[in-house]
Image (cartoon, rainbow, N blue to C red; front, side, top):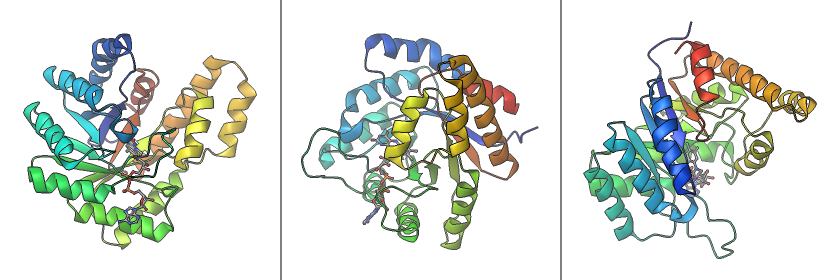
Length: 279
Ligand code: FAD
């Protein structure tokens, strides 16, 4: 039923243990790769805290011949450290990056030393020319620190003007917010693809906590429905797949240029949603 040509990508985060890393590389990546996403991406811990693990994972996935995009931010690092990392990614055959400002790691307490994503994009272009396809982050429900809806969109525009090629959104469950956002972006002259970030519902307690931090709204009807299931994880998983499949179907039917799955390093439910969509 869904169109076949859309861009689909899948995101991982670096596991904390060796066992987790082996599972991701040997089980999760091949299983999701069998679905044929355009690329995988691997997140970068706040402040650069996963610099080596992200590089290691990305290199291993590349060695298996799979397209993968590391996420990257300045964090607390200097320009040389980031330039060396870019060099390492080029040597590993990486062609795509997700460039971010990132956040200050929790618990550090010190003053923020964050460098805006637009400055990182400009730095990557200055050091590596057109080598990388650069993705940036976008926020249909607006970044939690943004001073206004319009300024946030103008800062997204600045990321494109600095050299970004496309954007991936923060996840959302209100599909109207995404299409309204696309219209507003078009109005200010943004004409590059803005892929819809989609979060499968896996651990509801974590989802609520994370959504409060990143400014994603979980509609009341979804919360109430899941609360009613109590500890019945099977019903929650089934409901989550239904809701997110419907969200994706609406996105694809209405012309979203593609979907980026925040897989949470799980094969299911991303695979079930893929299959339901007939992708
Ligand atoms: P920016 O685009 O720099 O914007 C940050 C804030 O500053 C916004 O409020 C914006 O309005 C404002 N702003 C931008 N430019 C200016 C300016 N010149 N002057 C004043 N204000 C400005 N976090 C991680 O730590 N690791 C990851 O791997 C990671 N991956 C992500 C992937 C995606 C697809 C998304 C959507 C988010 C991801 N994040 C990740 C979270 C992200 O780092 C945070 O949301 C962070 O707070 C903002 O990053 P950004 O790149 O959007 O920042």
